[in-house]
Each structure stands twice: as C-alpha cells, then as structure tokens.
Length: 199
Length: 185
Image (tube, rainbow over the protein chains, first blue to last red):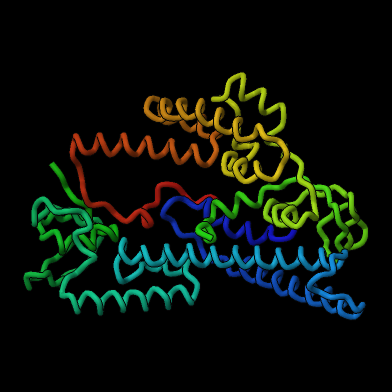
C-alpha cells in the first residue's frame, strides 16, 4: 500500500524508548524517497495521457484524473512523513546539546546521520557564541541550586589534571569522593561519569 | 497545519478504512483484487485514512464505518468499558474516532467515544495510583496511546510528589545515556 514505508519510519521513531534516539534509518529513508520519485513519474505519465487525448487536465474528471489524484496524494503524504522524521529528529538533536553538552559520546554520535552531525556542531557553535556575548553559561544550573557545593563520587576514571573553575586541578580517580562546586560537577554528572551523594 | 509534524497524528491517519469507489481510477496499484492497475467504480478497497479522507472530499469514494467502531465493540464498551482491549482494535481509538466521525453517516460515534473515555478515565487514574508495577504492566496492554500518556503522567506526578517530600539526588545522568533495558529490535 502507498505510504506504508513512510509510516514505518515514523513508527520506528515513536516506538523507541522515551528520550532515546534510534539510529538514522537511511535505508528506509531512501526507499520512501524512491517511492516519491515513482509516484512523480506515474503522475506525469497519467497527465501526459490526458493531454494526448485532448482533455482539459483542470476540469476533466475521468479515471485518469482520479489515478493522478491518488498519486499526488501519496506523494504529499510521503513528503509529510519524511519531513516529520527529519523535523522530530532535529528537535531531539538540539535537546542533546542541553542534556549532554557540547561533546557527544561516541555511541550517540554513531546514531546521527552526517547532516545531523553538522547540524549539531553548528547549533553548538551558535549557542557558544551567544553565551560568550552574554557572558553567561546557560547550560549549567538546569536545576535551581540549593548550595554552591555538592558531594560527588567518581564512577569512572576521568583522569588527572582536570582544571576546575577556581584554577585548581583535581585527580578524579575512580570511586574517589570529592566536594566540588556544583557548576564543575554538573557536566560530569549529566555525562554519567559522576554521581551526586546525598544525605 | 499545526499537526503537520506530529508523529502520532501521522500514524493515526495510517489506520485503514474500507471504502467503495464511486469513480474509476486508472494507473494505481491500490486494489489487491484487481489484475490490472485499474480500480473499477463500485469496487471495495481498504485504504489508509489519509487517502480515503481526501478522496471522500472529492466525492470519489464513500466511506464505511471502520471495524473498531462496530456493534461488537459498542456492546463490550457498554458492558464493562474498563476491560475492553482498545489498543488491539486501534491504538489511537479516540483520535481516529474524531477524524472518522464527520466522514460517515453514523452520528453515534461521538457519543460512543465520550462515554468510553469517561468511564475508562476513572479506572486509569485509580490503577495508576494503586496498582503495583506488575499488575500495572498487564493493565497497560489494553490502553490506547492517549490513556497510556494519562497513566504515565499520573504515575510520574505521584513519584515527583514523593520525591519532593523525601528529598533526593537532584542531578541525574541524562536519560538518553541511561541503559535500563536493552533496546528491543
């Protein structure tokens, strides 16, 4: 049936777990694209046939007219599916910037198509230039702070010599516990390298 | 146009409707019973809603009431609305019903939707607050997408309320990096 593949593409996107981004399905995407071209060809051939029979394409309502209409509608439908796929993924890609930060982990980067990667990088550069003109880092303090310092535990070896905002360096060995400025810790927590200790 | 990019709206419109062609159409392969790429006037074909709707507007087809609003479903909803499996009938039962209602001669669809939703809504909210996780997940399988959203909202509201009372970690790993379950392929 016409338009089924386009809808499959979207079902794949909507059935993925909330907040997760599935791999860009370029294979199916190309197939829908090819379907569009096919509809376009058939639409043109039907219209040409009507013209050869000397009918007015605008007003004649014969079988060819309805055939052409169905191809036109299928084409518009497929376009909508493709647009929605790209649009909703772009939405998701933008939100990655706020959730994870300017550097994407490898396993997420693999799921993006090439143009989505470029889009992410450009979006990130724009945001950086905007924040530097404002002189405020908008990506930190997503949760309103209660205390400027928090206690954290390191979950993974991050490495030595990381410079914190107060110009001191810290050695974040695995399982070590630190008392940090929350703005320094926040990016590591959202990337899953540290966890906040409470109580 | 507001819903042009809405994935749920697009999937709702993929739901099939059986129609009867009033006009012939050539050069299209949508009738599986036809040998040629030609649909005769008077033939009965299953079409997705998006196509049926547009063709109906141009008086090329007449639309029948879809199966998920048939007499059997109505009787089940009247008997015990909360335990009817609406998901297997149509995951977007209410949205699809709203789209279908203006197309068919049947004027009772609106009333059916309203009464089904009203009585199921109560049950969804009660279960969301009281059911344990396993019982809840069994209950889930009969809900439509709209009802699942309600169910999850009710549960997350309760969870946030408890968290607010007790307190707890305010920072969390970004949900996209969390791996609770393996992705089901």
